[in-house]
Image (tube, rainbow, N blue to C red; front, side, top):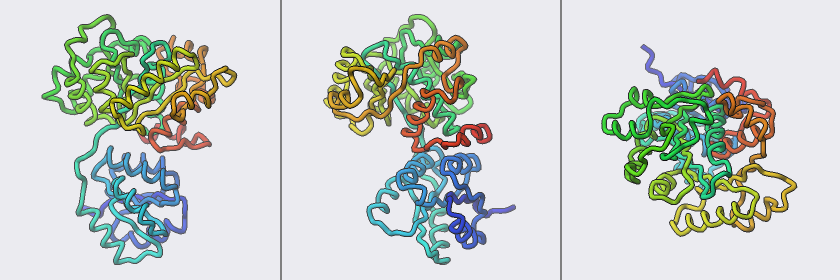
Length: 386
């Protein structure tokens, strides 16, 4: 039986890959190399690689995002960054992101051996867990549900990870209507079984849409949502984070204790804005309230939906009013939405070249740190890694 640990080199530098492989080959079973960091993430995850050697030449920001994502999804995988410079600030940021060690060229065989053995000895810390993204607006009709479900689809296409769309509109959610999906089980069932939850039970409680995302939503019709308190939202969030890599929460248009609990437990909050005076006023109120709640300002992002370039209220003016940069501008695409919704589809299964799909891909890339390939290769190969 071969007990040699599996490792992957992610770098577009062929010379660096050859040099690393020659040093590592006696002690690590090297797969790859992989030039693209996004494909490298998928392959390292799917192969359950114990070691990933990541070239800093892919970009410091991208490498940090890769490490955080890998340590969340697969805590036992050790990431070692490979570079030429010993920047103290970079070293500190990388360690905070979860990097196990650094390898600096020119490589020293003894140092590399020590780094590999040290990384394997450390193992995982069991701190994995999915990332929660809440989509919110205090004002209805600005497209919160369409943003949530289409973002979920693009996250799945981009990462191949397990993505859950969770509808917290417990009185009367719209997700099932848009996706034309019956809900066999609901959040109420999850809460009932939360103490005996395991992987088999979890995936029996969610439906899988043909886009690849998982969905959990209340039953069609008005339900007794008042029985669900903020402590139930906390319990639900803790459970689904064990089994899903991304949880996209479609929040109700209210500052209830349930909504605030969901937002407080989120890694990101996408506040949906619109180029009308009432919607902008409402968005400003939301930003002020989140500030009063002392939410981390960096986890709050503004998404401008149904964006029109020729609007009297341009994006720069909105940024001034909201005192926040707009993270994404999603164009209006009513004909495409109507066509896809009629068949229970999401827009990423429609016209792939439509501007709105490029915009959703960019937003998904911003959240994950994975930047879609301009050639579309990642999208075409995505099914290979699911």
